Every structure is written in structure tokens, then in C-alpha cells.
Length: 164
Image 1 (cartoon, rainbow, N blue to C red):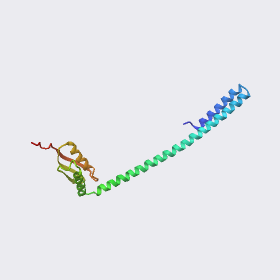
Image 2: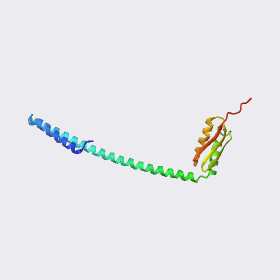
Image 3: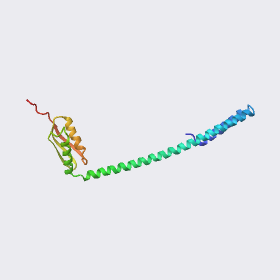
Image 4: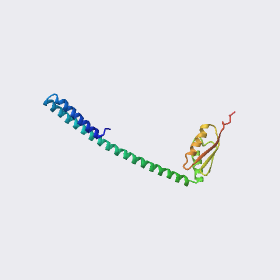
């Protein structure tokens, strides 16, 4: 962005140059040059006002953006504190029931004997499943229960016995 003083000095320099050129060509040229200087000076003034207005708008937008960022940070802090409060309020027994229930509701896992133990918000999973995918799914389900700090997955992957 140009400095307003630079624009003003540029206008004066242009004016003097045009007047000097006009002096070589008589009164008609002087009038034309003078009119052109007036138009250019008016254009420069309009441009300066537009730049100043846009700078003001930009400053307002930047201030609004900073306010929005601060509001977002405050809301994120509140959310984090609320989550922590809920997690602390959930007892191990409640976590056990939530995890066990979620595991039993999962269609692919309901036929497998998967058990969960909970101590200090740490869920330990035990049992047998036929695939790594089911082992991972059980861990994912347990970790999604609100209040779970960690999941220790001790589920074993064992192929089902061959039917003969």
C-alpha cells in the first residue's frame, strides 16, 4: 500500500511535469494539461479514499476474526472441562456396564465371549475372536465409552475349530 504522502507528492510532481510540457505548447496545451492534472488528482484522491476505506474494513475484519478465535478458544476450554468433569463423575461400575452393553450390542461380537474389567477408568478386554478385525472393533467400542481413559486389549485371535 502506498503512503498518502507519497500519493500527494506524486500528484504534485505529475502536475509540474504536465505544466512544464504545456508551457512548450501554448495556452490550449496548458489548459488541457491543467484539466488532465485535475482529473488525475481527483482520481488519486478517490483511490486514496478507497484504500483508506478498505484498510478500515480490513482492520474491522481482522478484529472480528480475533474475537471469534478468542470465543472459540473459550468454548473449547469449556468443552474440555465439561468432558473432564463427566469422565471424573463416571464410576468404574458404570463404565463396566456401558462397555459390556456396547460389546453385546455389536452384532459381530455378540456371539464371542469377550469380557471387560474396569479399574480406575482403564478397561481391560479379554476373550477370543476369530479375526484381528474383531479384536480391533472390540477395542474401538470400549474406547468410545465416555469416561474410558485407556483400553488394554488382551483379546486373543484364534481360528475357530475346524468342523470335521
